[in-house]
Length: 213
Image (tube, rainbow, N blue to C red; front, top):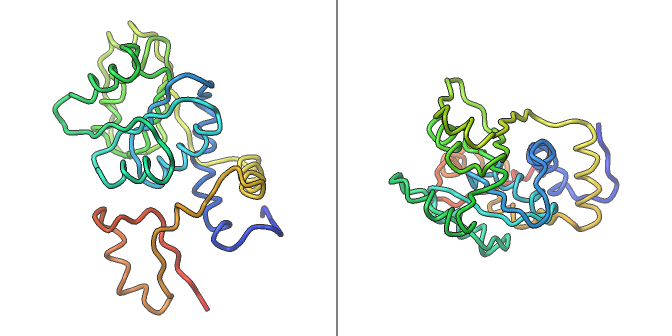
């Protein structure tokens, strides 16, 4: 158990989600001033975003969903976003943003086999690719590309006790603001009726809090 006498229940409810991103960023080691690409702007991708922001790296977010990209821009202050359209243009857009060098560190938080295979194309020379999402499938990659760019491929899984302790401290100090994460609320008695809508991307849910009296 990792107690805090300062955080609200809302804040405490988000510590575990944030810990996944915190541990992933620790694995990827983004550096201040370099570009970091986050693929997938769901809750796990956003947890990665919070800690990349603390590193001082320049954030780029790639996602299919325009609403999620708008959330990143308007609520989280992300300057660069790319919408995945499935035609390969995302690589050209990434090159335009990075002046042709691609991303020194890429985090794939989609949990999509197709996306994870594509992610190798976004990594700069000697860059790091961190797989945050997990799939029960095989990941394929173009081997000449892997060797030519001398990539490092990293996996990240869950979090460590020190991740939880650090995140609690960061929220207590106001360095992480959990408020934008909470987009929906539901009284416990209405949860069954509301739950299905929370599974649909068009609802715009980032995190929904269930309130128990």
